[in-house]
Each structure stands twice: as C-alpha cells, then as structure tokens.
Amino acid sequence: MIKLLHIENVAVIEEADIEFSTGLNVLTGETGAGKSIVIDSLSAATGFRTSREIIRTGAKHASVTAVFSDTEVSSWLEENAIEPDESGDIFISRKISADGKSVCRINGTPVPANILRELGSKLLDIHGQNDGRKLLDESAHLEYLDAFGKHEKELEEYALSYSLLCNKRTEIEKLTMDESEKERRIDMLKHQINEIEAAKLNVGEMNEITTRRELLLNSSKLTESVETAFELLYGGGETAGAVALISDACAQLDRASEYSQGLRILNERLNDIKYSTQDISDELRDFRTQLDFSPGELEELEERLDVLKRISRKYGSEEEALLHMENSKTELSDIEDGASKLTKLEAELKVCLTETEKLAASLSEKRKAAALSLQKQVEDELSQLNMKGVRFTVEFGKVSGDDGLNAFGCDDVWYLMSANAGEAPGRINRIASGGELARIMLALKNVLSGKTDTASMVFDEIDTGVSGIAAQRVGEKLAQLAKNRQVLCVTHLPQIAVMADTHFSISKSVKDGRTYTHVNHLDFEGRKHELARLSGGENITQTTLTSAEEQLTTAEAFKKTR
Image 1 (cartoon, one colour):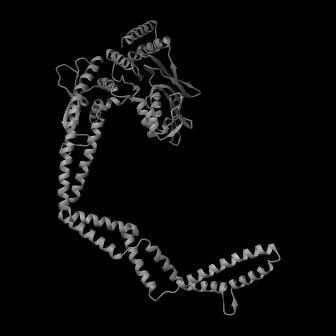
Image 2 (tube, rainbow, N blue to C red; image 1 turned 135 degrees about the vertical axis):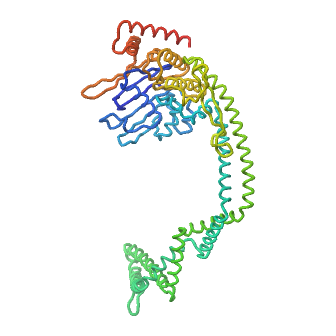
C-alpha cells in the first residue's frame, strides 16, 4: 500500500505531505480545490505520462515522492537490478523540469519512465474520471473478459501460432505473384547478377586503385622530389650523401670514445641516427620503383575505376554489392523453384491453420465459461449498487478476419445490459447512462480486483452521475472493497465520504496574489463539518451537523459488518 505522498510545486500545491492508511482513504473539497491534482501526482509518481504544464507557476521544477510498504515486488526489483531498501519499503521519486525532462528513481536508482510505469502498475490501479467511458469502447470488453478469466497463457500460445500463420501467408503471397510480374522480376535479378559478376569485384579494390591513380597522376612531381631526397641521403656523382657523412662521423667518434665516456654515449646516439637514415634511404629507393609504370596503365586504371563507381552507385560498396548478388541469386532460385516451394508452403499453412484454429477454439471455450461467471458476479455487484433486477450479459460473435481469426482469437465480445424489467438487453455503449456506467465500472473493478495482485486501488470521482440511494450503495461497495486492500477515492458525495477510514479535506487559499492548496487530515469533528458542507453547502447548521454525526455513526456500524 502507499504510506506517504510528498508533493512539491505541482499546479496549485506548493508543498504537501499526505500520509495514507489502510482501508478507505477519501479526499473531498470544493471543485477546483486540487483534489484531482493528488491523483495526477500519484499517476506521475508511478511513471505515467505527464508534462511540464503541471509545474507550479514560477517554479523551476515539480517533484513527487511516494513510499510504498507491504508490497510483493521483490522478484521484480531483483530482475531489474534495483537494490531493496533495508526497511522493506519502496521509495519512488520523479522530478519534472521546465524543459520537459523528468528524472525517475526507485530506491535511489535512476530508471527510465517506462520501467517506473511497469512497477507503478503493480503498486496502484488508478481508475480515472474517464475510465467509465472505456465501457463505450467495445474493443476493451474482450480485454476485461480475458483479465477476469486469467487467459494470459492461452493468449500467448495463440499469439505465437497466429504469428506463424501470418508469416506463412506472407511467404505464399510473395511466391504467387502474377506471371508477368514474375518474368519482370526474373529478368531484373539476372541482369543484376550478371552485372556484378562481370565486374569481378574484390573487396578494397576501389581504395587501392584510387591510391595508385593519384600516385601516377602526380608521378613527375613525386619522381623529382624522391630522386633529390634519395641523392641527398646516398649521394650522387662526386657528392657525398648524408649516410656517408654520418658514417664518417660515427667512425671518428668511435675512435675518440676510447678516451671519453660522454663521447661513447653520443656515438651510440649517432649510430642510431645512421641506421634510421639508411632505413629511410632504402624505403625511398623502393618507393621510387613504384613510380615506374607502363604506358597505358593510367588509362586502364581510369577504366576500371569507372566500372567500380558504376557498381557502387547502384549497389553500394564492394561488400554490399557482393551481398546483393548472393541475395539476388537466392531470390531467383526461390522464384524459379517456386512451384515446389509453394506446394510445400501451402501444406505447412494448412497444418498451421489447423493448429491456430484449435487454439482459438480452446480459448473461446474458456472465454465462454469465464463469461458465465463474470455475468453472475457483475449482476450480484450491481444489485448491491442499487441496480436490482439489472441483466448483464456477454455476447459472442465471430471476427471478420481471414479464416475467422485475428490477433486475439476468433471472438468478438460485447457487453449488454437491461436496467429495466421487461426490456431486452442492449449494448452498453448505446443505452447506459453516466451513473450506470460508473456503477458498472465499479462492479467490474470489484470483480477483477480478486483476479489481480494490485495492492492499492485509486478512484477519481467514481460518483459521476450517481446520487441518493445509489450513491450510498457505491459508498458501501467501496468500503467493502477496502476491507482487504487500500482504496483511495476522490468524491463530492457525503454518502461515499462518510464511509472513509481516513478522510482528507482539500482546500485552497489566496495569499499575496498566489493560490495555495492545503491537504488536511480530518478528525471526527472535522469530518462532521465536512460532511455537513457536502450535504448543505455553506449553510452549516446544528441540524446538518447532527445529521452528519448520525451518518458517521451509521457508517461505522456498517463497516463492522463488512
């Protein structure tokens, strides 16, 4: 569960610390006071999308820190190389800067937002104001059913088989191109293969030829400089070269070094220079031989370079061109051998289709069994939410994909309901009111909560479109839901707020032209005044206070029976 939420510079909240408890935690306050900002802060802390727009005006950054306890995520922390805290708690923080960047940490370890979001989904199940509208999206109905039935393993097996089926179909489509297209493709492949083979490519040849060409183009300048340098080193005619002069100097120092240790060291250094000079002279002599070229060599190099450049423009480097040639040969072979390969693929497709259909049928049967249980449990929940006599059904249909299959199996699923006796069930997205959507969503959440390991549930204004006795039933249901888990709820209704085990009041004030939001933990007297305000507005009288006290007493009696 979440123990502590620390908020800094988020919207109108400059700084707030909220210490949540077990059971039902309720947040109430005037519209615009900042109740939903608390939920937004929880969402940001658990890695969900946020933006720099939440930063309080004038602040450089916003930050949220959340502390969770009694969690079952030790294996997840180990898998993600995050050290557990010695207290056993989990410390999560997120800092959002004005440039839009955010820094996320788990137990002090920096992590990407998607990793934080993965952990956050294990710690909190946040039900926002618009989640009830998800029931209007029938594509989500199958997802809810599969979550209820715990079909993860079956879905994984089916998805693998369906992916293989799609790959087989793609391979067959490639081989079943029309004859004219096939002939064009064969001609193109043969042309490309012949062109690359005729070029007789060698990896690295273009670089070698380019280097040799530059050498020949500048051979006259190079020859003159190399000849002069060689003559200066080795001598020419009656002129002694540097090598001979250094050798003579070495001989003189060698004789003199018998009488001086210092000269012996100089002689060794000069000998090193002599050997280096000889090596350079030999390399110059070898380089000079490279400048000898036959007539027509430059023209041959230019012609070869033209061939290599043409290949390079069409196919890339020598390595890329050779790889393209091998791939083209493989494709050409596949096309020319297409008839036999097509027969083989079609046989494989048939086997794969049979297996995929078998898995889809098995998954469908499990879904239908789960649907019967879901229908009963949701109807029981709705009855407790003052929707007695409501009929909730799950209708199945066949998908319209190839062979009656798609990525999720062979089923289309719709939720239907009839809120009035004698009326045939109709699709929820066509007949349900806002209040009915809210209660159906709460019923689903309550049913699905027994199928998940999420420790804490968060409801942001689940009371939309609900009032009177229905609101009382929603409050009672939230209290029952909070018996074995932590529940956080933002509400405007006294029927829900009265069921709180821990009650927070969110208020705002203006000081020096700035708006500030405050979060206060209410005691019994504070709760009386807040419930009186929720019931009667600003006109708080002794009568409304007495009524609030009676509601609190009744709520406590109910919670003892849950």
